[in-house]
Length: 449
Image (cartoon, rainbow, N blue to C red):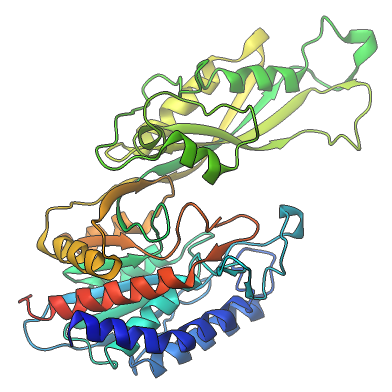
């Protein structure tokens, strides 16, 4: 098949691909604790059926000690052909109405802009249907040994890392294709080559033995919430850059994002400034960032004229490729423990360490992916980073140290709004990604493993 043949074939497959996406979006496969199990199990079962129908006849729901099962299958290729693993995930984020949805989250909805809206439409059910479309374009007969792994708990506490470590032979390959990313802008192809990691902790500040009347004691007795606010403010400097001693930052060597584009993507309110220094690409992909992502204190509805004795916050810090998560978290903890105002007592509980990841870009298989993407999009491919973390990637690297990594997908940063309200995907981006993956696998079929 020529490139034109593949493009024509994929165009003919798209109605079925979009029908699959619409069906899968309608299944609320939220794997978080406290949500119903039946939809996640139904999603796993239906996805398995689609994978088998697309040509992976031996695909199965794999046995795992806990949590929802990954889907795994293999199509053997010709002797000496490269071994390629395709990855996506079938679970999704919750979709609370309070987020501000303008459509029903679990009904795939087309708007005038042509995009398909719904929870998981981009992250990562678009990745699943990209793989399905690729398999169909190849008529279920790839010219490489093809393995597929679809995770069921990527958005919550993943069980896949344990599965990989328990079954390293299943993941011994030449190339991992991680279809859970996207371009900065629709139609402008990009490979993601760097991911920030994530460390977090919970900090509790205590100033009093018990609550006090704010009128009787205010002005002399320290308020724990005010002390917590002052402590959190020490984590960044006046420009918004991280001010924690020992935390590493750098510069991004690839494509950046304009200030104007970022303001639009992030929906900054009029008059609100961006924070940090350096190019936007530096701030997003090569420098650390800190956010207070949760606070425990009395709600406004339950408040009264009381000085609170304790207040807590969950602090998340994104860390850059090349850093040690444990060392970065230790630096954050040390800062919080040493910067409390007014002698307030501080207790810090570490929660999480997720490693950053950096892809090599000079390998022959990544080069083949760049060529395939350029052919599919008709434009030169740029190199971008991502602030999101995928701890699984380092685990995969550990069991397959010779493997190269390609991180791409249909989830455009500018429009997809993953994890947020009105998540969506551009169907033309899915089509181009199916073409790119098909061209990649066809090209690799002529290479020796």
